[in-house]
Amino acid sequence: MAEESFYGVTLTADSNSVTWDYDEDYARGQKLVIKQILLGAEAKENEFNVVEVNTVKDSVQIPIAVLKAGETRAVNPDVEFYESKVVFKLIKGSGPVYIHGHNIKDDVEVVDMEEEEDEDDVAEDEEDEHPKKRAKIENAADAKNNKNNKKK
View 1: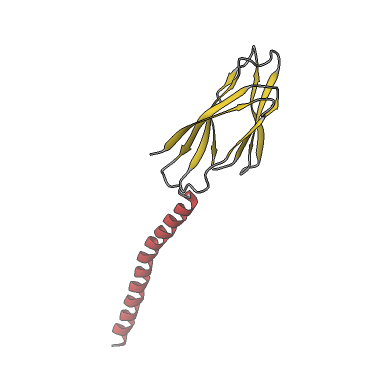
View 2 (view 1 turned 60 degrees about the vertical axis):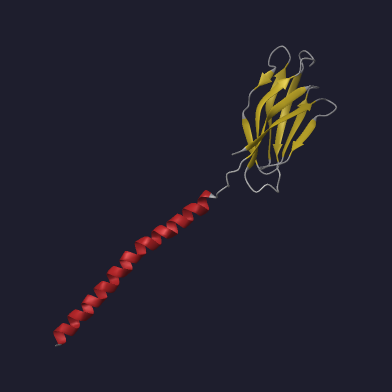
């Protein structure tokens, strides 16, 4: 069962950047899910507020929300950041902008699918190989017996 906790931060002109970092000591999967980004009621009219995200692991730096009082006060991006340090930054506007979602620590062990497929392929190859080897050995034995029977 997953351990889930609320995640919430506020970006303003004075505090325009916040970092979420996963727990490297946690042995299982961990992710941050952003559900909603809201523009505060006290935001300035006709001012665009742009929130940018920067993921360290994938080196992605892109705006994920453009908000404006009187037009767009909320977006629901529903984005997930899996085991990567993430920086949210208010690159335009004075806010306040509220970001909230879930911090999820999963109890399910993360399995490398490629590695698992490679192991399955090796097992299948071994299974396929055994009947072939047996057939070759049996054919060789039959041929030897036939030679011996002809000599007699």
